[in-house]
Image (cartoon, rainbow, N blue to C red; front, side, top):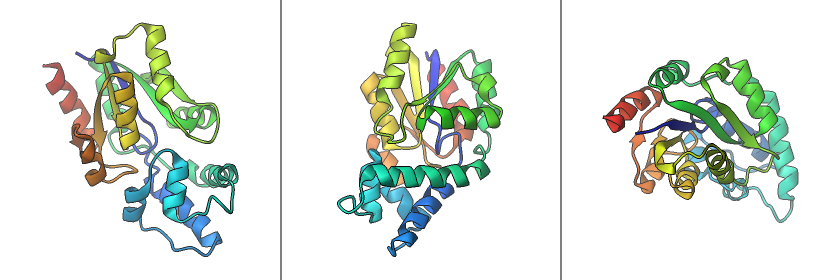
Length: 215
């Protein structure tokens, strides 16, 4: 059934959930604002990220979003090298490849950051393409996937998106593709379940889900 599997990166393959919460807490602490628990972080993280900044307590009337985005990016550059893959990431990528399904990463990360992370973690060999954004503001990644599959002449019903946020589901909807979400990342299971698509606990369940869908 599926010829392609599109992976989100942050919170789906890359385990940077704790880092995301820690970065926001640094920004909040610098301003004397209340800090977030990881659970609260998973309840408010969203796209576009300017809405997340507001929900966290940052005042976009006093500080331009562009300046906050630069601050966040600088902190991420400092802290993210310590992030690794989620358990079973490499094994799942290898198993999906062995099923004859092509794979790519589509992310709201800047392209240079995404390339560096994917290459350093040693999984580039499993991916047909690694597609990120051209700037640091992370507004949307929907058009990236659509453009790629138009160029490849791949029908949307042959593509499965796997992500960890409602934005991933929105991207899949916009592209006309199927979607499954993982409750291990940047948004809580309760939020993900509002999308009405399958929500798996972790990466370890993806292959079983795929085989069930392919049967």
